[in-house]
Every structure is written in structure tokens, then in C-alpha cells.
Length: 192
Image (cartoon, rainbow, N blue to C red; front, top):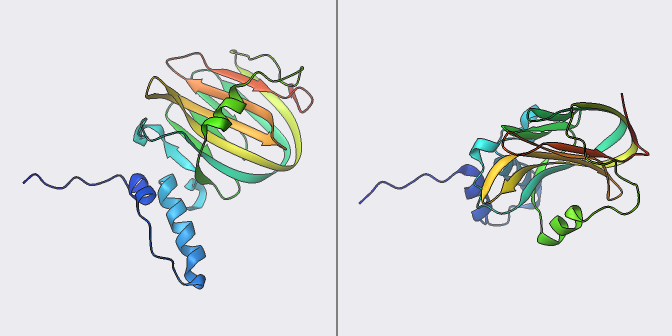
């Protein structure tokens, strides 16, 4: 009989259905499961995921957190990295959300369709494919998200998105195989 294969901890965490814990331990259990799903042990690495460890057939998901806004600095280097200082980054190797309480969440087909729809009016700047630095002002509560970029059942890079009130402030994708791009909300961001 062949030896039993070990299951990836992230996959195992999504398959197990633990018995309800007593109320006092439930929040600690939730935090531990969230850390396992993201694939790290907490601290500053709580929202960091290596894209080498991602199963492309595992469905669409993102690492997401609610964070406090303010003055944002965006650095876009095509094929290398998209980062927003203090919030997180995406590259072809890893994605990270570095603020709030990051957790891995499923992304529905309806949400994917909403995001891929062409924005109305002149809200977003035309995509750029050139190195760019932005200064943005986004006051209030933000939703910060990092996610794998899928193409033909393969992970080809990382994506990063910052939203306020359902509107993208900054959104972009980094890939070594495909063209990287960045877009931003014109009224919140300007090139440096």
C-alpha cells in the first residue's frame, strides 16, 4: 500500500469542519484557522502568500482586509512589483496584504464579472504599462485585496486592488508572462 500523501495545510483547513468550540475559544480558533488558510503564522506575515504554493484549480480567492486610508504611495514596476506603502504588494512570486486583519476569502463569479466590466465615465485612468509612481489621498475605510492572477488554469502573477465604497482607487496586475498594468481613480491619485 503506498504511503499516505500529506495535504497542503491551506487545503486541509478549507476541508475540515471542526466541532463548534465553546464561545470563549471560538475567536481564537477562528484566528488560527484564518492564519492556516492564508498559509502563515501571524505577525507581519499574516497576509503574505507565495504564489508557488497556490493550486490553480483551487477556485478564485483573494487575501482581503479592511484598513484605514490616508495618504497612499503607489510604486508600479511592470513585470516586477506593484506596491502600496503600508497596505501591501503583488509580484509574480507573492502577494501580500500588510494592514488590518487579512483573511483569505472566496471570490464569486458575479464579483469577477463586476470587476472586469468597463468602468463608466472617466473614473479610472487608462491602463498604463510603464513604470509609474502615484500619490493618492483615500480617507476613510478601505478594502485592500491581493490575489493570484489566473490564465488558462495557471497562476501567472499577482494582482492588487484598493477600494473605497466599492470604487477602485488603485488596481493592477503583475506578470512576467503577460503584460503588467496599472489603473487608478483620477480624482484620488496623481502621478508623482
